[in-house]
Length: 130
Image (cartoon, rainbow, N blue to C red):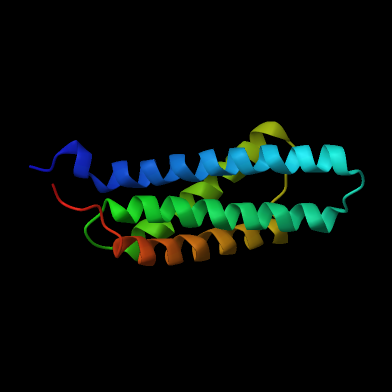
């Protein structure tokens, strides 16, 4: 019987938590920079959000894949997909007029790409057995 500590779902959840903690921290830094630097155009803000999402999902996927013995690509894709779904759901909760568009598809593509790469790398960085 599998122990809960080795569950793939728990590893994916751990990866999601890592991704959202990193996202939250990076967005706090971005908000401080935008507040104190003056005028930043919209394209720069979106670029910062895309880079933040990519880095966060990449790190979260590495975290998830390190704790799973196989299928790093799938665990990374799962982290990327769930990250995007949660971000979309949050967008709908905060802004009822939120619409799905090209920026959402761009975020999905970036999250899936970062997740896949992080999963592939993370499977090769497995946690050493005790």
